[in-house]
Image (cartoon, rainbow, N blue to C red; front, side, top):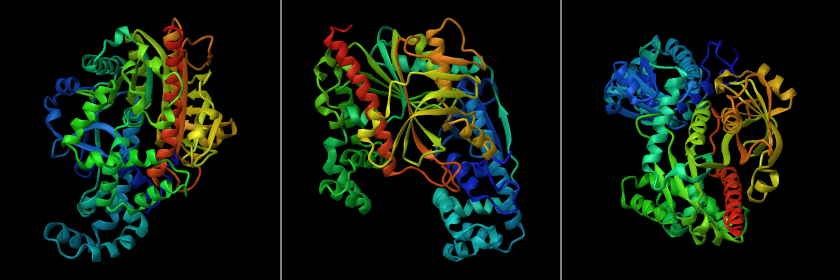
Length: 538
């Protein structure tokens, strides 16, 4: 297949980029896992012989959000939202197995294996001495080995010991996979949202946002901005001199960066460091005062949500970049924002279809997500007006309510590219250079997984039939009675060697694109609702 994420699959030496990519997106328990079981909900697991799966050890991966549990022996259970989770998991397991077994061949007969065992079991010899010998033994560069060690942390020696001792052969079991199974899981997910919501969503107009669980709330609640001194002390305690120096440069006007973005970045680390402490209750209380309710996902796939009442928002708490005239009219609004944590692939279709059939009316559908770019740089923003969807094989032509002018004033380090053509692919591993070249020559430069499924759901929300297959579909303003806006930020440049998510993850400077796009979305909603308020709610 010659996957762009697994270019050395046939080579004898290990593919460091593929190893890093998989290690970021699979839980550490994968080193002890033989069987991977996939299902949509705890009921599905129980019916198929796994009655207490939620009592297993919860496990996570730094680069992929998926509800996963480990039985402590050899079985990992993954909750899936759509066929896209299968298209994501299977290639990663395959790639990891290939690379694991390459390293196994190198370590199994090596005298280094006995010394690894001695280090893991007795602490001797010293890890520093072993580390110096590993690059030659594994045919990996010291830099790649260091990146793998950073991902695996203190389990890295045990990981290598497992690699050396065992030939890996994963088994996979899908417990249920019909369209009805996915729809049932999505309906249960929405049921938890409506049960926990402070308002009856079936009687309220809704602005639907698919983004993340931090940027929208940070900008509307002002929680981080009111704790500036506390966050700076935290950065000092953590030894983050790089961020403190950046803050000083911002205050001195030496760099164009925004102080607010730095504080939002610091807040994530601060909250993680104080998990379970009083600050979490303080945050919940302050967000409740301005109409924000967090809702966790239970018993099904992992997609958190937030319900935000526009009439209860406090404009004096807003990020300064959101302030505009006539915000006092928000007090008359009956609308709510439903913001969800970005789903994977076809999960987007199931979720938006469920939301559209359950709320009083949709006033807007806004999608903020990451994508690969074939003509930009990491940190750029892409705004498409054409989306080709590999799932339905449709090409959607639509009026994107956003242009470069909505994002560019707030984007410091990247470039905003509008009038782009996007393609929604089935999975990240399922692309190769020939495939990319074909779409690049056709003008498709924005590669992601959710825009097409979302537009299929939009089609069904405004037309009297299911979305078509293999057609050119128009969704212009005359056809769609609500806003549709899609913004992507570039996190991959797959045609540039080594510059993909396996090689680089967005950090503090990656906040620039995320928050610039979030500002555009929130300003659009606030403007529409303020305008409606001026007209008496019409």
